[in-house]
Amino acid sequence: MSESTGLSVVVLAGGISHERDVSLRSGRRVADALIEAGHRVEVRDPDAGLLPYLAERRPDAVFPALHGSSGEDGSLLELLAALGVPTVGSTGAAARRAWSKPVASSLVAQAGIAVPESIVLSHEAFRELGASSVLRVVRAAMQGDLVVKPASGGSAQGVSIVDDPTELPRAMVEAFTYAEVAVVERRIVGTEIAVAVIGTGDEARALTAVEIVPTTGVYSFQERYNAGETTFFAPSRLDDAVVDAATDAALLAHRTLGLRDLSRVDLIVDGQGTPWFLEANVLPGLTETSLLPLAIEASGATASAVYDELVRAAVARDA
Image (tube, rainbow, N blue to C red; front, side, top):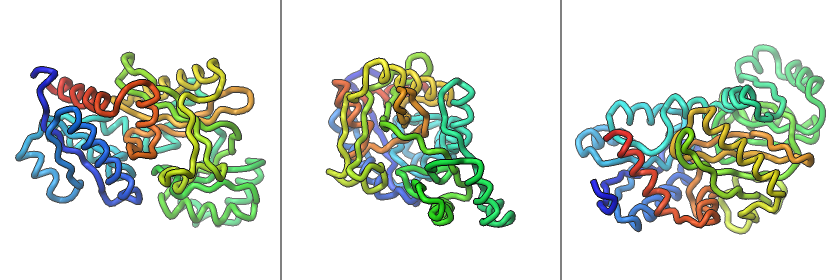
């Protein structure tokens, strides 16, 4: 198949996760970029009719633009692999590693990347051992400001910064609203940056690092998806040596987790210039306010060219 030949691509968007609306916006942007690249594109929701449709129609490739459990926990990715449909993105196994923040943090820490100290609590243990007793131990073990977040999920949903110990119970309840496991970690104060990675293994390359400066000081759901709530700097204003260290950490995290095609690694750089790993996203936001498209533009590329590259790489893998 020549490079100029347009492919039939199904873009998956929507789903039933808390991030459905974001996914629909991502999917529309991906579809527009692929159409611009000359492909024949259809946008579909991952509903009960999806798998029979794909089995019958056999598109050249599938490009998931799904966020939350519907696309990032690995289940759908493994089903698409079982169908034999070339799919952009990581394998199901790699997606599961990144989807679980405690698992991802443990693996990248073993690889030598700095990871905030944390305690992982299941909702069941929280109930059985008694909330007051559990929180008393947590506060004694972890001094200073904390971040409480669901152990899985994205878009900062269910995430709280706790600078007052009396707010910790509320933060736990908020996190458990989105997942059965919560992470309580020491807050690292510094500059938040995101590094998008394109490619696989030794061929993976990092795009321009994006510095994130939310108006409220916290990069919450609202700051992520409402225009004007956050200022982005691409390239980052950090020193070149610090950016290089963060980029190296992102590439190492991508490879350590076995990610493929695209990812976005979120880090925070402390006052000493050390990049700390926060999480890796296997299907990052691709909306008009998302970080990966901004990184593509800052790197001198276009979304249509990069997404075309990813689709053709998926097709070549299964050729």
